[in-house]
Length: 129
Image (cartoon, rainbow, N blue to C red; front, side):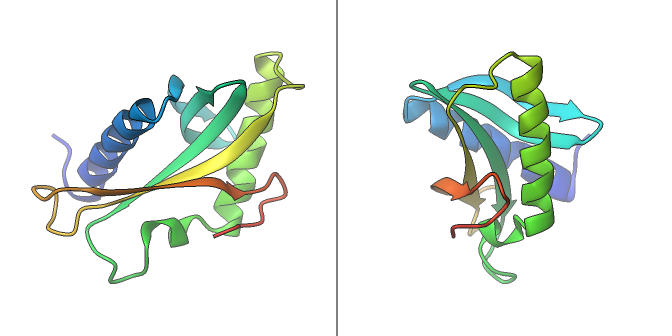
């Protein structure tokens, strides 16, 4: 049984995936994992490959969820994305890095707030939010 932060993260990813689909994204992979790290969601929006980091919180006490996508995490995501593009023979494909911030203000039983941050950071790991 999943508890605490793990279940919060799983629920946040489920909400993010549903939200992205309603926005016209096609989900290609969930929890894409390599020895370099993991990317929560890989999707397509039109002709663009989108690497999505999902962050979930129950309050803003420690800042918004997207604030926890550190420069170190961004570099890790970029490294995994490069590997993915190489493995899938998509090196010439247009791509971007998005963050989906999910907040459950009243806990998991409450209505989630979802914020999609397109182009949240560049391939050099520089946050734009």
